[in-house]
Image (cartoon, rainbow, N blue to C red; front, side, top):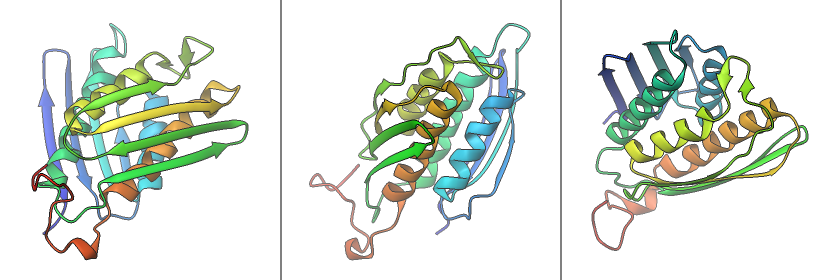
Length: 196
């Protein structure tokens, strides 16, 4: 069966549509109205090898909060939908990714229990046109609606662009690892409980 998720979210503050294919090749079609967020989501798709479409329109005349948050929520829901019962997946993933002087570490557990512990400090208030405080918030929203445990650590880095991009690339590689089918499991759920 195809491992895809297609979710639309519409509120008074934003309209977001996400189409996600876990067994893609890294194709991305991203348009959120926030250039730096588009860049991070494009990087996420390319390095996870997921095919990802994100179309978002939000009240950017207020600020980017609603748009970025709702993108995280909708992407999380699409991931949850694509994983289905989470049968025969590796479940755990981790990655240590450098980008020049920056070094980010991400570990995830797709075990169905949402949690986010994010230690990703930034030096400035903005990166491109995106408020830097929205990056941890988006990642938190993604983990909550994606129903997975997410740990993000910045281990080194001076440049905020590099810090953020290393984190998204590490998340991509960890997701690629955790979502991969494990043929040794057959159709089993990777949990002692028998369900996720």
